[in-house]
Length: 274
Image (cartoon, rainbow, N blue to C red; front, side, top):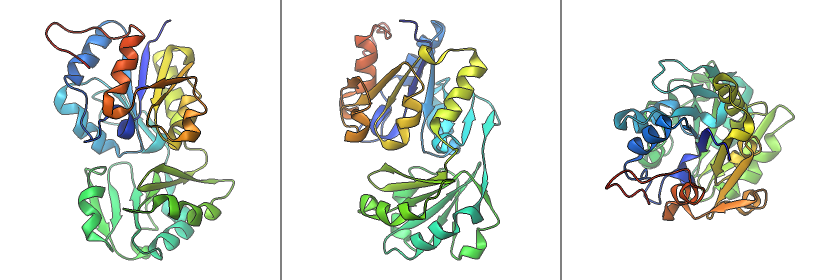
């Protein structure tokens, strides 16, 4: 086994049930880097949100954000991979989201998010995923933007919302159920897989040198890139069916336990990892 890159989704995968990173995660990543093994985070989250999580703890992780529309090396000021689309491309989805009771459409840009202001009570939850954000009210305010995707939040019924948005997809537009409260809408060309391939090529790595962990349907593309695709024990059934390996759930520190079982992790002195 010649694993040189560990790739993990965030919510439902690396983070526990309280959205916390594993203990001493920065030290863990630095230790792996010293042995020639990198770590990449591949998330539907905003790039600024990911930087706010990992920069303070000194974790040298590559960041794949917005379901693969952006990717940046550790500490880099600018992404090395970027794929933006005019917001007008999503106008039908935005209209449907605005007409759906309880739904909040979020336009995700390269450096900030624009959050619909109809449901301010949901802003604390939405803010968990978007560190830099601005409100918007009318559709005309945002159609001139260039964005990575549209993410539609619903606090109770994302799976029920998904069938309403899916018919608005097209050969060029993909609608993805990306979490229990989120439906992501992006150009069909965008996938975590594209950014992961770009990262592998940039680092001179072969796909079979990556091990990839995920839990939801927006992880499926990148999990087809690496030789080892590992579904979390809490993963969506359709994703689990695609993977030969299953890790313990995220609530049981499943990523680290699986890596330990493979012999990729060592315990720093006095610092239990799992």
